[in-house]
Image 1 (cartoon, rainbow, N blue to C red):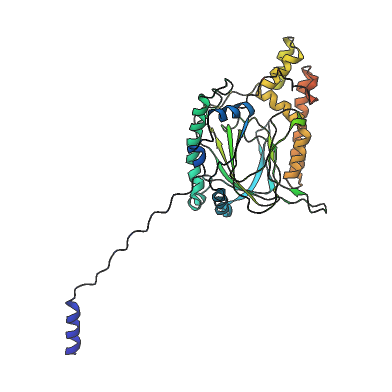
Image 2: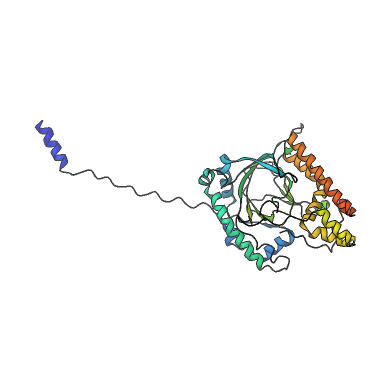
Length: 377
């Protein structure tokens, strides 16, 4: 007993045990910037923005230093993705309809409970970086050379929505095994009467597998024989185009494809909505009452965005239906959407014909050299 007490006393002479606090872990590295090349390089300049304003689109290769980083971002967002859908708004009631696209998944930072933002910080960072890009585009547009470009984009109010997308076509059936369903039908990204998006930026990463497909199909002309402008999804490529006024589609992908889309120019909350567009029929009746000839009517239709959009819906009605059938699986909802589209086109056709302009259905009408440039923004 005495030996045990003595041993305990000897231990106490050493004092209390010392516990050192481990150093804090280093902060996580910043997420990769997917816009660093566009923001800090020489790809975007005043001539490039002038071309965007003139043609409605701009293709920039080498916009990503490491296209594989974008693929990693899309892969990390995959658990948070849901099926991408075409949204339809009934012109009379304002009711929205939804048709899921075959083989297309998407995730949007800031639209959920924050789990995606925490898991994929590069996507969350992209939302703030897009505001800087909007400011850059606006500044470049204010100094662009051609008069058509000046003042066309300075109204961009900042960054907007961001979506990461993964797509791969699915077999459409029919026995051949080669026909794919998927991609995006012919559409415009935004409606000026519903939201403030004005400019779409799409960034392409390296393909997640071999094969092709996934081309962006642009329709800047009202002449079907001159369309589409086909842009393959090359790794590191960026495409900017008008969100409201440039119809486009996306072909089904043979293999997995990864891309990120950013929309610039989202209107700040609290600002009044833009005035409603003038109905096409009213424009044409006004011209007819003024005794306008065919050349003046053509120039007016092409210069007024709403009238040009209506003419495009008529010219490309058959192509729109085919693209809808390619992008969506057969269903009663698809049949209803196609029937609604036909009914809306019949109303537009009656408006043109009722005003005495019979040439709307002719592909060559409205493609003369004296036509005004389209107002893409």
